[in-house]
Image (cartoon, rainbow, N blue to C red; front, side, top):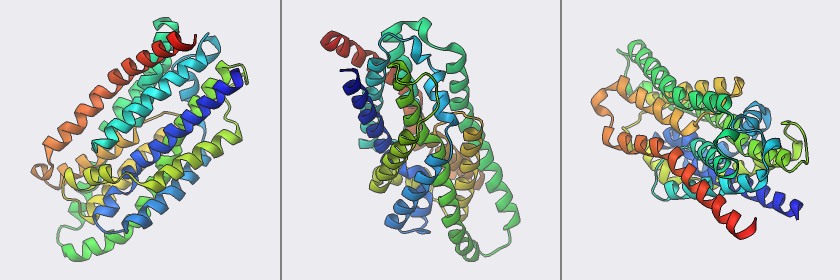
Length: 331
């Protein structure tokens, strides 16, 4: 029976990754689509390919997810905890996607896993040091991205202050193709690893393996699921990211993409999971503020920030509820 439960975990984890792909497609291509640097379908296909390549390139974040929240080998109901966490994270991703809110899949997964661990094994089972490091990365990375986006845009404004806007936009529209590829690759390096980590968590909890190394089949499966999800495209969120925060010109999109990709790849190199949604949105906000503070639609930004704040507590409660249901029905 245990092997069938593990296959349920793998299915749910890959479903989460698939949903993460179309939920977070906007992260990589919203600016390039909104400025017409790339046609929507071309942008989505490019993002899918680069997401796959990025997902195959690293495993450090997966190991952090797999062992940072709790030690799966110590959990009596480790596999059931993972199932509850994935159900909660998937539910929240679908709800926020439906309403076009660029919430964080990372926050959803971390909050869900922490809530399920607490419900299944108590607060003492949570790795306080590991969860603290993860939360620091999740909270500080948007601030860093905002700052870098602001600085990039401020520098570009100074350099091209006396240049023709038409010529500037023409040149940076071409540059956006490169930054969109860079952005998509960086997204894959961090986000796809979260599903890898949760599968490894379940494998260790079930006693199938005794370390946090990511098997090749897990890497390929997660990378493929995210690429397929990306190919579907999250058009509602693309509209929010690309048009509703502020009017993005090619030079703005270039600065936002470059700044956020640097932050995400740095986090990946440090084995830290970050919210690509938060990082990219914050970079767009930083760029918009540097362009003209009043150009940013802060009411829309405020709505997005509310989703950021409530995601972790809501997903924790959802995961606790799902674990309770699983316990009553199956344990």
